[in-house]
Image 1: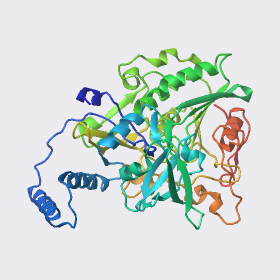
Image 2: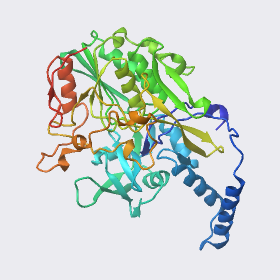
Image 3: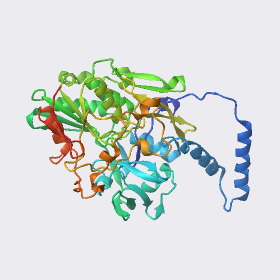
Image 4: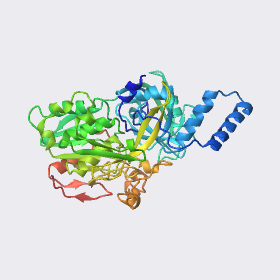
Length: 468
């Protein structure tokens, strides 16, 4: 791949998807000499390298040792920095285009194991019943204890139509659960829409890809073909993120031109940037797809649905629309993935994924390890929360929020957010599909937009609606 092509990949802000997509940001960053090389430490490294080469019980190649050393340096920093070998680097580039092979789950790490952040809609993982919060303890017969995410991804990948057994521990279950999956090509349909009763439009974004902004415009035009809808619901629950340009474009569809959507700040000068609702930032030199946007999109009353599986790019959109008062955010507190990763190629086939800065909403709120707190808290189901609470703040060595004393603001009420299936004598919430008739949070969004009272669930009570 040429350096020019690497520069045009753009920023990505998702989690790691086994099936699988890497949760990264991509940017060509020139290597800079910032400090003298630590010669004593490098000499120590050289001694360890030689000791392993000469004395380890089995032969080990120089490439294996160097790759392991690089991987160790990065994984010891935070949950999102990583070494991308040739296969992982290729997978990452492919996945942002919306089609890749595997199981269809977004994953992170916890307690040395691989943890499911969210299954992707209409994939083998979702159809087999995998849930957010599942702790993957085995892939086939191989334990994932202490395994790097990239290694776990390799185990889960394989030829299409081949089986793999995933063993998980699920909160509230005393014994491990074995889930049989069949690998498939994962074609992520980024945007879906439909018209609900009372002329309320419903748009679901499951992941931010290269065409998400343009697809959103097409769906909005379809929703308004018989006249503008009275209101709109933007659903980003269990959306793990994706391309930053997609998040900026989606935000720009509902905000005035040139509004600040998100900013980044880090140690290096080139990690500080302000991204605006402007084609320079969301179209990146391509045709401005928002020229075809229906005019009603800027003023239609809106509710944004989020939950604990809404991460990164989806948090950027929710935070921007919330800060400007453009929409009411409803649901559960989001994941809190507010750090920026850049991809730095170290060869034509390999790269490192390095955390370089934090994301901030237009009002300067750090998303990192905090997430977006909804204006109206609503449990996952009528009888309580269904999805296991696993957020950025739960990951080992997560980056701090970066705002000092403000880090306690919007802290998750873990007792209230805990799945009610884990509470004594509580009814067991039933799984549901986002957008279906039994989608409790969607029902409450409709109630709000119709000016009716909102049932926030057993943990939150009832609130009176006051539509924008």
